[in-house]
Image 1 (cartoon, one colour):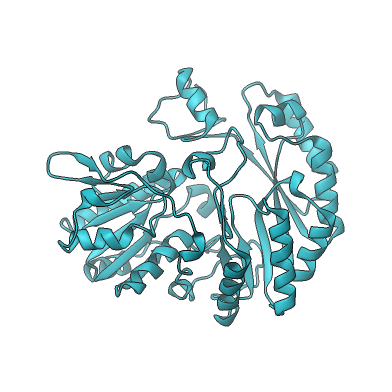
Image 2 (cartoon, helix red, strand yellow; image 1 turned 90 degrees about the vertical axis):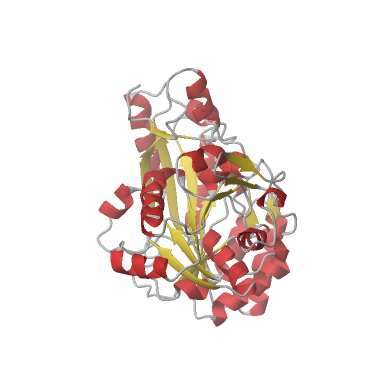
Length: 407
C-alpha cells in the first residue's frame, strides 16, 4: 500500500508576510498517522504545503505513485484544502480519498458534502486508519468502523460511534524523518536549518472554556495526558534524530503543574540537550519554582494568550484571569530569562477605540519581547460562533468570520 498524506497551505497572510517560505511547525497529526501506516507495512509520502510552495510536478508524481490519499482539513485554510482535494479527484478520479483534522471533527457531514472525499475521520485517526485501509482492501466494512462518515453511490453514511483513545501512551511516536529535510521553526530561531526543529504534544484537549476557542468542541471537552516516561522516551528519540529545538504545542501547557515539574526534573536528570518553546500557556499557570526548573531544562520561549488590556473583555471571553495575573506572569517569565511572547485579540462586540487604545497601552507596559494583535475570529465550534449564528449575525456556512467584517 502506497499512501500520500497532504497538509494544505496555511492562511494567505502567513505566506504573504513571510520573506522566507518555511513551516511554522511540523504537521504532527499527519506524522502520527504516517507512523501508524508504516507500522502496518505501507510506504508513505508526505507533502507539507505549509512549509514548501506548491510544485505541480512533485504533486502529480506523488499522486500518480499512490494507492490512497489522506488530507488534513483546517477551518482557516479550508478553501485551499478544497482546491487540492478537487485537484486530486481530477487527476485520479478513482483513488480513495480520506479527510480528517479539526474541521472534519467539527463538521463531518458538511466536510464530505463540500468535497469529493471518500471517508471523513472524526477525532483521533490513529485508532481507525488501519481498519479503513482494510475496508478498501475488501477485508472489512466501513460501517463497522467507529468515528467515520463515508460516501456511497447514493448517500453519506456513518460508522459506529466515535471513540477517543484513552491511553495516549499507546500511540506510536510521529514519523518525523519524513520531514527531516524541511525547515521549520525560524520564528523561534532564524538560524535553524532543516532537521533541527520539531514539535511535540504532551497532552490532547484543553480543560478551559474560552468563548472564542473551538478546541473544547474538537476534543469533546476531554483532557488527556501522556505519562512522563512516554514523553521522555519520545524526547530521547527526537534528540537521537538530530533535532535541537522542540516546540511543545499542546492546546495549553502546563495544565498539570506537578506532572510538568516531574517532566522537567527528568529532562535535567537524563541530561537531554534540547531547547524548548511553549506555544500556548496561561498566566494563571505561572509558577516561580516551575519556571526556574523549566529554564534549567532548556525552555527558552513562552507564548501567552493575553487577549486584552480590559478586564471586562477578559471576562466576556471567559478567560478566568485578571490584569494583575497577566502582569505577574509576564514579569515572572521575563525575570526567569524566557523570550516572552504575548498575543492580544481585538474586536469583542462591545469594544470601542478606547478599549483598543487601552489594550495597546497595557501591552506596552509589559516586559514582552514579542507581541501580536489579531482580530477576533468567530470560528465554527466556538461558543461565540454559535451565539453569532443564533442571533443571525453570521450564516451557519460562514465557518470563520473576522471581527473586522461588517454584518
